[in-house]
Image (cartoon, rainbow, N blue to C red; front, side, top):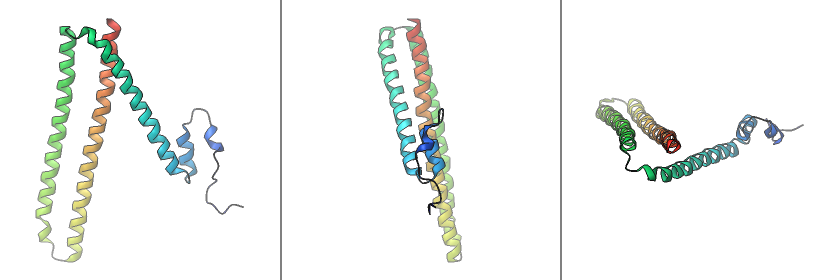
Length: 158
């Protein structure tokens, strides 16, 4: 009888239609390996999309002076700028809230209240940074997918 709380075998990985990291997550003990595998899979997917977009960009070079292509390209750029402006506005608002909360720290009248306010400020900062990083990565992924789709439509029509 094993003293381990979970079975540490790799036989469950061979299930068809199930990514290998999902089976490893279920095992629990192999979670770090599964995290590494998920990261590798996503990085490979991102690299493949970047290579595909690079090839599509080379195909668009022949249509560089087409006014329709330029107009649509500028619309894509404007959409990206708008999203970045919205993210910058969210950042400024979040920082303003943090500054207000920081100014209220001196109102603490006990050490426990002071610690509570400091920890609250740190957790709010972490949430703000997490949201900003997540939104930026989501925007980058969105740009890659949208550009790839748009470029494939333009290259396909040429």
